[in-house]
Length: 441
Ligand code: NAD
Ligand code: G6P
Ligand code: MN
Image (cartoon, rainbow, N blue to C red; front, top):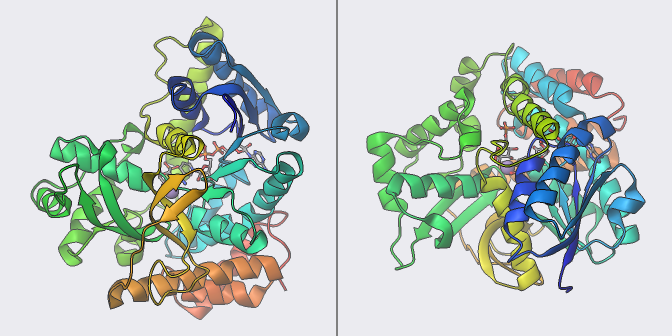
């Protein structure tokens, strides 16, 4: 590869973009840049972050060309890495994904349950278009995708582009959890070797070895039992995130074998969670009044004063750093371990080959090389087969425009589970997603 890289950030107007820009300027030693371009379909939204970026790059990385655009040719020509974080339908549609199911007594959340399926089907056409647009101009670029719901997007893209070898789907929640474990044990987690298995937002740490080979999982369990579990990431300190982290102690009490991903709270305690969520004020409201407001206000302030020195726009670096570090691992062929989504192909025994499982992998110039997991116990296997089947049917509903498969997907989904309720929520989601979903027959 080149001495210096050209990258594009797709979804330049994302609330996470300033953090990624900051991480990019900080990591020039491991991820050297020639050009950074932000691309978004919403020019106005992107310009606020883009003007912040111009100042940041001028101050922190003056040798790097920086720009933002809504022109695909400018964005995708001759790029080495595409960092992708779009939100089809924006926060208005996220709000519906959360509120429609909740109004019926079902979990309403960005990436899980009926709302997660709505968002997944909505994201697919845009994601397919992005891959095609990139490939038409930069056939060899690496596409690092974390657009949600990453489980459905990863599976859907693998179905549509079966020969693709340069799309890496990754989620930051395992890293957020690792950072939190590090904080509660008073240790640095950056070189720990995790063993992890599952699907995206649906997985478990089975072991976590420190540099001396000691497995920290029992220590973390013991700590959590005594003192509870808290996020280290300042981006995850809103009330709903604190409630989410607190549920880890419950999960460990009931299912003490492994350390659970926080998203499992919805699948393991759907009734409790529904009872504790407010259908009139969901996570999207919290983000609109919190992260989104703070990020955009801060970017406007920086543009006004003309300097990003001392700017507090990024509360924590976990997300941006992970994206830069995994990209650097590919670029420099470091073979460092990351938890990523990959096609199963026997990694987890007796599990469908085409599932996009989330596991630890060594990442180098040819992408992730996953570590074997082997056989998993009945409880986890049962949960995962159910969730995989839902994911597959949801994507097939999109690909085949099939109402029947969408209904099957939701009926299988643990957070819906009842055929009549599935039909009711599906009909409401079809109506709410008009113009975003293909017409289902
Ligand atoms: P956001 O709405 O603030 O930003 C998304 C941006 O994408 C917007 O500026 C929007 O205009 C733009 N966009 C929409 N469709 C587009 C398209 N077709 N092409 C180009 N740009 C487009 O949302 P956010 O909260 O910042 O999140 C962005 C995405 O990143 C979401 O999907 C979110 O779930 C995901 N995310 C994933 C992880 C993970 O761990 N996998 C972590 C953080 C965020
Ligand atoms: C975690 C998840 C992401 C999610 C992010 C923000 O990091 O892994 O998939 O997008 O949280 O969620 P929020 O509800 O704060 O927008
Ligand atoms: Mn995630």
